[in-house]
Length: 95
Ligand code: HEC
Image 1 (cartoon, protein in one colour):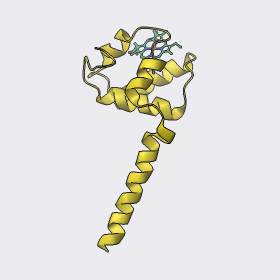
Image 2 (cartoon, rainbow, N blue to C red):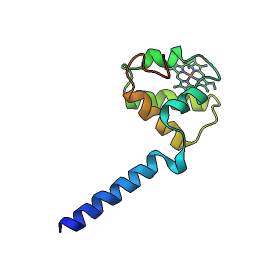
Image 3 (cartoon, rainbow, N blue to C red):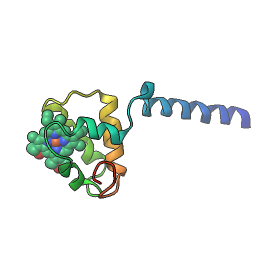
């Protein structure tokens, strides 16, 4: 019983781990640095840190994608999750 439970937990971790870093995809902060700087400075992004929650960032980032950003759904997720948890002024994005 205990073994079955830990197997399930291990499986869940494996699945969520895959979701977070599909084939070693860049993490949230470096994605922001590479993807979010082509149209405007990161000041715009930093202004939202600590203010926008995950849903708000998902909405914003989807809008950015609609304006022509080249990005995968996984990368968009990673960015939204990173920004929703980043603190105001957080480096390396706002340093
Ligand atoms: C294709 C060009 C483009 C890219 C790439 C881009 N943006 Fe923007 N962004 C804009 C424009 C244009 C505006 C101003 C107009 C507006 O807000 O719709 C803006 C405004 C913003 C704002 C201020 C408005 C608001 O809703 O808070 C934030 C925050 C923002 N962008 C975040 C991001 C993030 C995060 C990324 C990377 C995931 C990103 N942007 C990538 C074009 C872009």
